[in-house]
Image 1: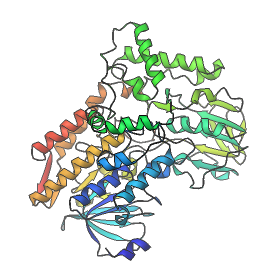
Image 2: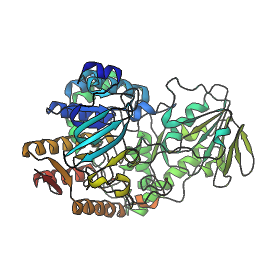
Image 3: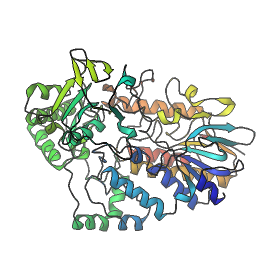
Image 4: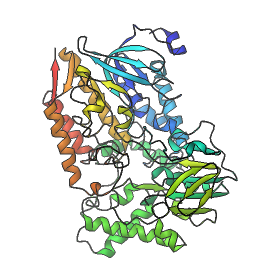
Length: 544
């Protein structure tokens, strides 16, 4: 492709690629590196003004990963592992952005990435067995394969509150934060939403604002991160043992190389369980708690023991018993909604400049020019922050006009619920693959470990198709249906289905309810993928 086309964003209609990738986050960057190394001509199209995906857009105060930095990183290159210096146990957004910028530069990826450009449409052409891709800069591209690396948590749930257009102050969605940041100093701020994002925003903003009013629909279980700076000695030890650490991560269901899980907790005396939970609480992070026993997410008894433990921690931390009760989850199992990781979240409610409103008891009526009207009164605010979540896993894919064989749209194909063979490919959409799609482990652990496995799997499939001389590869309908049923069957054996969460699409009105990610864990998922490859791409049909 001519160099000046990259520089100006213009496009030659004759541009033809082997693979077009939508998205330049962790997935898109590794796909580009891996497929380009295998000899494919690849173009990555990214809507943001820089690489990073989620970590480009989510610049809100307090944003950081909930997997330890040394594990929330690429493992494919030893030099990269050894040279990068992580400064904190849980890296913040700015540090992760710097890391991904470093990856893009180190492997010379930018020359094949087109920024500030969206994939508006991708239509499969049966006569030429390729994809016609239309982008927001007016380009029309041709590619044999398309890979949707659009991210499981990138399609925002827009605020739809009555009167928002009349608000005279400033309002922001957490996942579309302005590059220049927001000055909260001395401001009256309302934060709507207390999921993972809200839990990170609220303590940070409360230190700056005159007053923060938190409007909560559902209280969340949250575990302290115990974040801290990483010493040189600690990082040197990790780097010296990275090879073993990465192997253990691939052998763990969660993609995190922690010590093996203990025996099941069912039947263990309550005082013994609580002592073990206490050790996990002191370590901090999700894994320290969830790996206490192997049946936390499958046994109602063990899960309730842990839930009681966390509820007691909330009561011990929050001074006002009325506020503590509002913050205490009671009607769903721990883990059925995404378990949060925080830095002084519950402690923040002890500040005199923080107020909590339960919108179930005092619902939001409308946004007014001066603030928020609830059923019982008016809240005067200068800034509103919407931390209201995403159309998870499928939303970003459905935002693109994707049409497969005979004009079939992805929206129509998924009207009764999303299905994808092994979470990778969709029947009726030849030569198209999904990253972290429905039916993949996606978000139930260390997403970087998960996506590295998926990238390697997709690359292996494309290399096999190329070697075979096939024109198209497509998921078979029976295989797609079988895997979708398996995903729901595995989920039904857990407590995940007992919460109204984005895991099941319950946060989006009209979205079919069903468990979206694969709850069988990375090891089992990888085994299924390997078996598919060893059986000659079982569940896929190839045409010459």
